[in-house]
Image 1 (cartoon, rainbow, N blue to C red):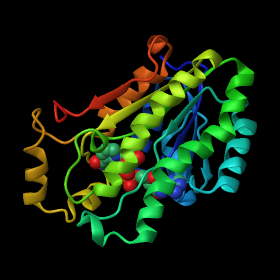
Image 2: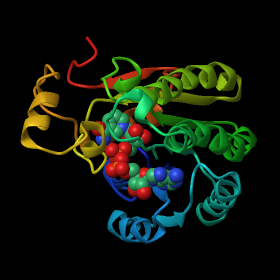
Image 3: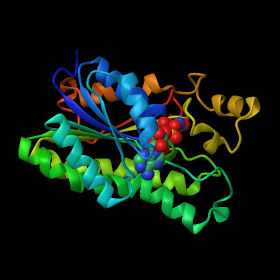
Length: 248
Ligand SMILES: NC(=O)c1ccc[n+]([C@@H]2O[C@H](COP(=O)([O-])OP(=O)(O)OC[C@H]3O[C@@H](n4cnc5c(N)ncnc54)[C@H](O)[C@@H]3O)[C@@H](O)[C@H]2O)c1
């Protein structure tokens, strides 16, 4: 078991990549707190994840809710070793000027501001404990952007970069910070990226991936498991593409 006796917070864990990460971490011995905007779905997911997993309803773009949820996670789990900032959202695929100011603000609040809020809430705890691991879910969108997703791409560029900034600043505290950059994946968010979920759109997306398929929650969870385990003790500031060659 590669996460024996570890505890983890995974945000956006009610479905998609976050649920895959939570399930894999629990299978490898971790106790997991699943944070999600949808508290009911998070509770059902925590039951499925098992191994003492807990669910906490939380909007990760809201500082008060983040402080409350992180405090509750520390109280219930005893301590937190690992944070996975996975919760994310996008505007629908459309021309850049058609994205409303409200949509723009939401994308940056959920994808970028949440990392700042979670760090404010949890880094002091990790410092006190002498270390920790943070994994941010960025995207290939921040490396090799697709048309129609301009502001989402920009937010993921920020996620990829802030992971390196955090890694440098937090290394003296023995806190490792890495990012994953998944390619388009089999989750409910995919339709938003494609604009519409049709066999033709899926085939067009697949055609841009040399390995010939979309990513799955298990692909992302396998990479997350490695980066959050002690096996990756010397790895910090990495942005690991999980993309079947899309960014080459
Ligand atoms: N699916 C893809 O193609 C893909 C590709 C690259 C990167 N990503 C990134 O992976 C991460 C997970 O995406 P997914 O595809 O699993 O998405 P998803 O929409 O399937 O799941 C996201 C989860 O996050 C939760 N969430 C949304 N806003 C929240 C908020 N403000 N506070 C708390 N929880 C919130 C949702 O309720 C949902 O349970 C995101 O950061 C996304 O940008 C996805």
